[in-house]
Amino acid sequence: MEKIIDIEDRIPTLREKRRKRTNKKFIFLITLFFITLFLLLYFQSSYSDIKTINIKGSTIVGEDVYIDQSTLQVGQSMWSFREKEIEEQLKTLEWVKEVDVKKRWLTSVDINIEEWQKVAYVSENNVFYPILENGVIFKESSTNEPIDAPIFLAFEDNDMRKKLLKELANLKPTVLALISQINSTPSESDPYAVTLFMNDGYEVRAEINSLAEKLNYYPSIIAQIENSGEFEKGIIDIEVGTYYRSFSEEYSYEVITDTNSDESIDIDDTENDNANTDEQEVLADE
Image (tube, rainbow, N blue to C red):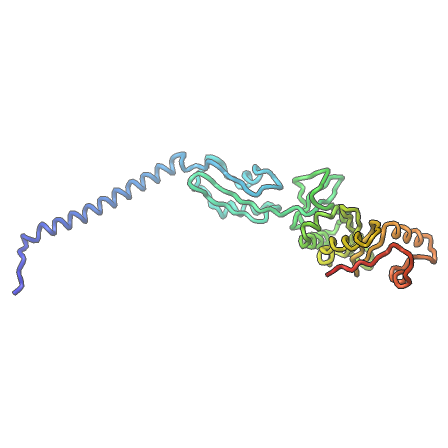
């Protein structure tokens, strides 16, 4: 026979359970109240304001340019803007490649900038302006003595300039650093012909469409020339094959050609007849 528990005996237990449930609700409500109060006080106080704006990756322009473009200000609420909106504003700058904006802790904003790199300079009205990887001529900055990238001369065609920039981007950094100046020297047979003046004294004649592929072998070409014994600096032609001609030989060739002499120098005939010239064919170890 089951034992019957009197309702009077169960009342204390029910009361205790009810009291515990009431206490839990009260604690939850009190906690929620204080959290809400804290948030209200935080958003209304200076503790929610921006204290520092950190810019990283700024090399082309000063940090103040990015701060002005972002429209962020010290003292502004940390919650009055969205990171994506600030990123879009900064990406409108033509020299900016990528942007990442992050809120850090409760008072700081980090802005990480990736800029398009300078790869060359162009001269306009005797002032040198940097050309960026994306083909933009950056006129916010100018210099009279560019030393960290080659100078472009006679490149009026924007499409041709972009083709050349693409080729330069595929060069090894050590090779790119050897280029002092690049002149556009088109002809009827080759509108993409260029002449490069190197920092080590050589001159290179090339074609834009194959420039990176062939010029990356420049150090090995120079090594072959200078390890062949007595040598004279001159012109390296990589437009079709890879040929070397000393400056004295080139100038002699031009003089003979200009005077319409029958003794003009033919590269292939001279090599086949083993003539006594300084001209050499340099085969790049491609």
